[in-house]
Length: 351
Image 1 (cartoon, one colour):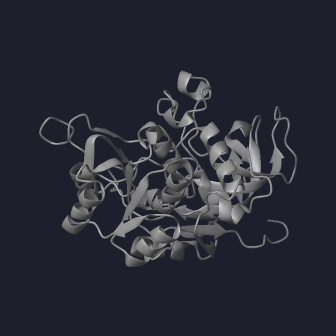
Image 2 (image 1 turned 180 degrees about the vertical axis):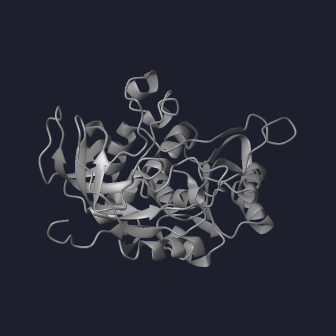
């Protein structure tokens, strides 16, 4: 089968021929119908050799959708051809957090060397994807896999971050979204659906600010001193109740610290090196900062229900598997509107 692999540190990913996996006991094989492109992929490919821990060659793609092709001994309840989304943050399935469906916070995944597809295990940017356990599959139903595949991260990750802040996002509150990319534009829709907050979006790109307004933001600004003044003016001087930073760069986390309100919350969602210093002289009284990661299995089911109800959708641009390297070039250049999705070409007989 064909797959997009990162094969050497510092090199561009390339499409290669690899062996088609065969499911062993307890495993499921999917024929891939779509795979999402994420900034996290670019982050790990930009790591220097002394920090790279994901193994080579690495088949990319931690957002995956496909149809059930076959399975190994011990798997029950599946049907060949059944459409599925892949829950990506695999855990052990046995520890306390995994028992709650929070495999994104598995207590022993690192110890047991359990890695997500595309982030250590072979990913979804291939014609077939091996799933370690059927519990990591969520039925897609009649949703379009190409339009829906990014719900597994670009939908789940902001949903998980926002859900934790819902008690504070009451009428009269203000939510600031920094970065209107693949995750940020979905976050705006989730905030619009689940809260009565005023939503302010920030991005350096004018087209992305336009997208923010299209999907439900009340205001959209280029970050900077003027944006900070605007946020203060719109909140009567209080600042933002919650700030969701989908960039995570030092400049954006510093901005979040400047605009958060007394008792407010900062969620650093973007995979970057920015940090927030919390203390008497660095943040407003009782302000809190956290770094949520991905989301739980039950939350992915909830995200799918929001999509099925027409409350959220992902802006996508599609690329064939052959053109997947171009998608990463566009991602680096910042010219993707929403999320890039890789769609494998029609498979040839015998592959």
